[in-house]
Length: 209
Image (cartoon, rainbow, N blue to C red; front, side, top):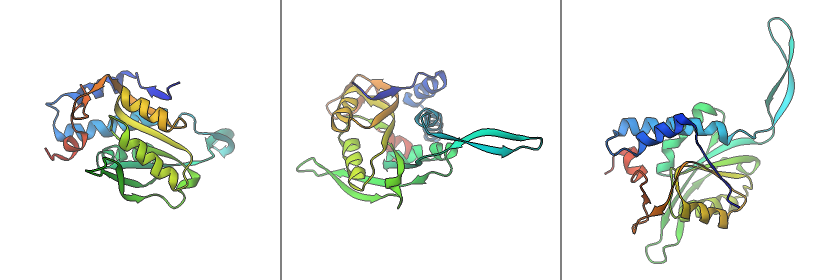
């Protein structure tokens, strides 16, 4: 059974359409990635536990609820995942941020971790991994495993566009990890790009192509 949540909210769908457009400027692309990430954050945090507390308002004492349980951490996969951080932090300003960087060994094609810096209390937090594009799923799967190897047991993956192959890979390698995405595309081309996708998210975020 697939563990994937696909957003159907009209605002998210509208913004994803603008994101796909090749004529969208770098400035607009960055803003859209941030806005979509913030909107998706509402659903990613839907199941955060609550506890009842008493608050003194200006006129009476009220019984109300606050977040309890595990705190959140967000970990973008470098470099494209950086574009999703600000949107999440605007919603969750107290979240701690880690970073993980991977590259593929040109001979073995295996993912190699070149950078990983997590919050010191990451194992006590629910970690949301950020990566705009889930294509083959190889890099995301490796990043999740590297994070697990650091003692983290509660992980979610949040991406903007996912290919079916990528979803299947994460479900196979990490059946405990829920995937949240704004759109699912059918296939990959011979270079591993999602079709129709939106091109290279990192290049479009940082103007490197």
